[in-house]
Length: 137
Image (cartoon, rainbow, N blue to C red; front, side):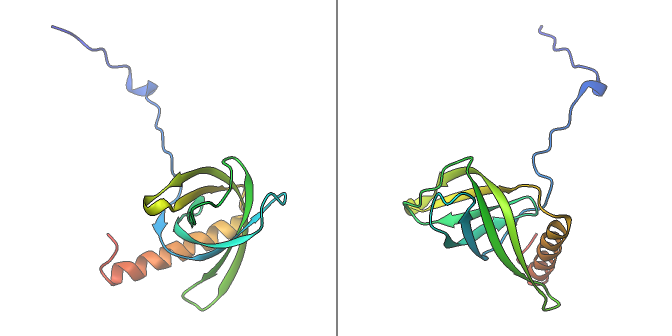
């Protein structure tokens, strides 16, 4: 009979990849290069969190992984306030979706504390709205 040894519980290390809740939401966004590598363009988000976003790209859009971009967002809160965020971001990866479209995955680089709070508030309000409609679990 084979025996497996289990290490002490104190040696276990918790690995958590996400720090923030991610929400599937479509928002208009503008993507600008940090160093003029490409012409700025508009796109739609696939999902967003306070730590990053996934953005739908048309086939043939040329953005390299590890490049840096500015992501511009306009967030409308329930109170009617509109917050314009300019978030310096790092391209984590670009993946291909069905029908040849692509997804750009970005991580926000050192966002300002108030920008993180605004994003979290926006996501929370959207979750509450979706839950009221029975669309969010």
